[in-house]
Length: 512
Image (tube, rainbow, N blue to C red):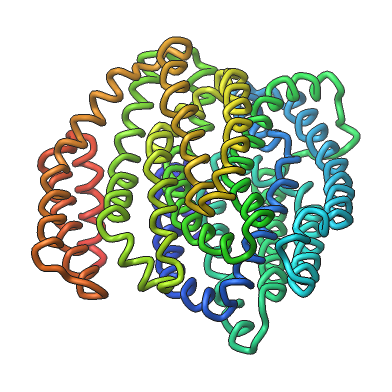
């Protein structure tokens, strides 16, 4: 274990990706087993309350102001250039700001609780209001306590200690359901789940703190606060922060709107679709999430646009295989899966999931572009454009949610995603950042064509056999998966990708 934790940077990136997929695999298995039990143990209304509280408290998390990303980028640059004193000032300044933000979180949480009835009182019962009040108090305290210590995770990321970070992620994935199941069996409800989630989070925060102190030994003190450093970092992080605000609003505003205009049940059906959508986001960040320090170093070393474009296309192709595979699974088998998994009451979640997942698939395969923007300090345009699009999202989602419930709210969000990430950002990447977007889409387009026969055959078999239930998922899903892998290996993959696939297959054979 110690050997793995002390692996060199290149190995850390590779192991980080592998452990991320291990985490996703474990998370997927636990989700398949745990979520149906979770939904039925809590009930639709209680699950809706839990989802609503989680989405509301997410707005307080944006008080990070983008500083976490700034710590990662600038620490990586200072480590590369050997500027130790500037790094100490950076860490002391951000830690001081985080302490202030913790106090702001407490005040914001108190203000939210004071106005809770005015926001949700029209659609939530008195008992539901009491429960959500307690959950928000717990989540606010959790966030306020853990906020200052998040700097240690950013420092570990900058130093490319991905193995430890991903192992903590796996622990977080496993610990919550393992602790929650006994509580639910004993009859406890959403409040108990929030208590367990808080405990797990604080354990992970403490682990980051202890490991970072021993491994990196950063010098972090409020006495190193430096106003010029804050001004410099804020100039970078403000637009990161604006982007975080936009993403937080786009992914959580629908729950907020539905809670206000439709009630807890509508929130619960939307939350099931959001769970599926969140898997796509996690998958896209698996590879690109470990690439930010490398991209920052490439930009610092004055890498050319063609070199950055080559990296952008290489990572985008790898992400495409995973995201397109799961998106196509959702299209072909999603309805039957959701009914079996969550229950017939959640069938509408299939339509909501499709509306969210299909447009978001495009920015997910281009996620490395965001790392390039951040490393080049070029996030201003995207953040401003995203903010404007978010206002449009809110404006159209409210009437759509009133008229069509979760489907209407999802349509508003899908429109915002398409306008910003598919239309606006591809033009910006090409004309301003210098990425070869035309070549990127030629690569992706050629790959899509290679998988069309597998999709067509699966749809035809489904239509002819008319299977339903578990047999439908196992037979047709297994057949489609086999055709997808064969199509990928023999038609779509280049030599680099086949080498990766062959290496993974060889390791699996050796361990079998």
